[in-house]
Length: 148
Image (cartoon, rainbow, N blue to C red; front, side, top):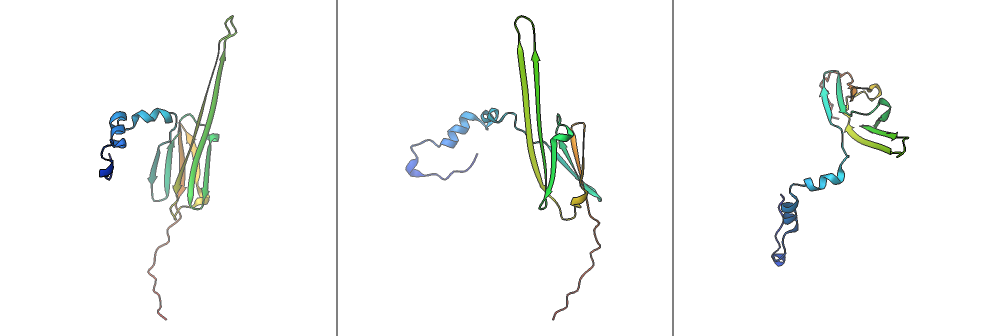
């Protein structure tokens, strides 16, 4: 529910967002219109040596993924198409054809201490594992600035 400024000149009209919320509930009514659209879940872990991203994308193949590093961003995208056709050559000749299409893209801002040239990825058991190795942190020595 959101706060809406009340206008006394329009008080004879019902508040459309309010009666729509009452009728449709919390928005579940609109969900079927976007059925089939999903963004894979991502787990991010950090160790002393690297960041790791685990992207849950079952049903994909390793060739379905594209990983790009550009201007400090890591973009992981995937596209999967499949078709299945069954034919029955009996007298009634029944044909059934099913197809599916999945596509996603996720972008992440890379920390400054990631070696972008050494990023690696592997896909196994429905999980895309992307490893982002960290650069060796130089010891930060205090710096003295001379006033001139």
